[in-house]
Image (cartoon, rainbow, N blue to C red):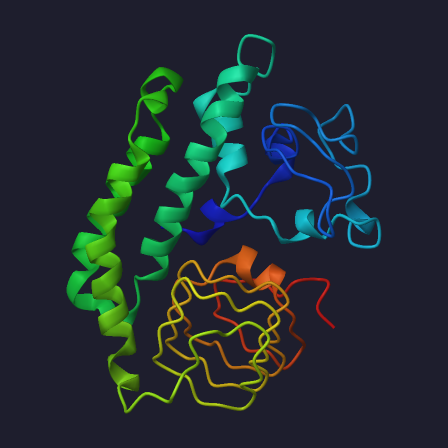
Length: 262
C-alpha cells in the first residue's frame, strides 16, 4: 500500500483534529478545549491561524499529533466532502475510530519488508480487509468493533517483529525497568523491544536502534540525536515528532524529518 495514504493532507480535511478532539491547558496546549468544539486558532477555512508558530505559542502538542491520514479519509470518503450540521456530530464520533484503523494499516504496511517475505500474502490480505473497512458508509463504520480488529492483527505484528529482529539476535544488554530520563547514549540496542515503554527525556543519542520495536512507546523529548533508526519497527511520525533529533539521526525511509529538529 502506498505510504502517501497515511500522509496528512489538511487541505482535504475539515480541521477534524482541531475540532473533534479535546485537550487541556498544559505545557502542550495553550488553552482548554472540549471535544466537538473548534479550537480558537481554527479559521473559517478549517486552517490553523498559528500553524507556523505553534511551538512558541504554547501548542507543542499540535506539532506532534498525526492522524495517519484519517482526517481526509473521513472528510472526503466517509462523508463525501459534506460538512454541515447533519454530518458534524457523527463525523466527530467516527474520526477517532478512523485514526485507529489507519494506524493499524500503517503498522502492517511498515511490516512489508524483505525480511518478512514469507508472510507478505497474509499482510497484504489483511491490509485489503482493513482498507475495505475504512470505506464503509457512516452507519456501518459506527458499529464496527475496532478493538476486535486489533486483536486479529496482533499475531501478525508478532510475526513481523520476529522476522525483522532475527538478524540482530544476540545476548541482550542489561536494560533498565524505568527508562524515563535515563542516559543510555551510544549503546547498541538493535533488536530490542521497547514496546509500550515510557522514554520521556531518555537519552538515546548515538545509539544503534535498528530493528527495535517501538510499538506504543512514548518518545516525548527522547534524545535521538545521531541515533540510527534505519529499520526501526512500528515507529510512527507522531513518535518522531515528539522526540528530539538532528541532521545525524537516521530515520526509516517511510518517515519525515520534523521541521523543528535542529
